[in-house]
Image (cartoon, rainbow, N blue to C red; front, side, top):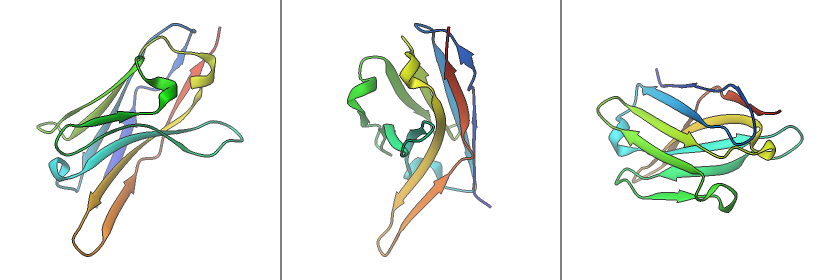
Length: 119
C-alpha cells in the first residue's frame, strides 16, 4: 500500500519559515520524481516545486529564492523548506510522487498539510 504522509504545516507570521516533510512508503522512492503542490481556497492546485530522481529541481516563479525542495532517499522523505513566507503562500500543501514507466506513469498523492500565513 502506497502512502505519502505530509507533516509540518502550521500557522506562521509573514516573513517566517516552515519546513514541510513528506514520508513515502510502498514505493521505490529513489525512482520517483517528488513534488510539492498547493491549493488555496477557490483556486486550482498548482505546482510549487519538484525534484527529480536525479536531484534536479524546478520551482514555480512565485517561490523561487524562498523555497527549497530536497530529498533524502535513505529516509524515503522529501522536504520543502519555506522561508520569507507571504500571505499568498497560505494553502493546503500536497506531496506528489511521480514515476514515468515504460508503459504507464504512476502518480500518488498525500492527504495534504495546511500552511497558514497570517499576522
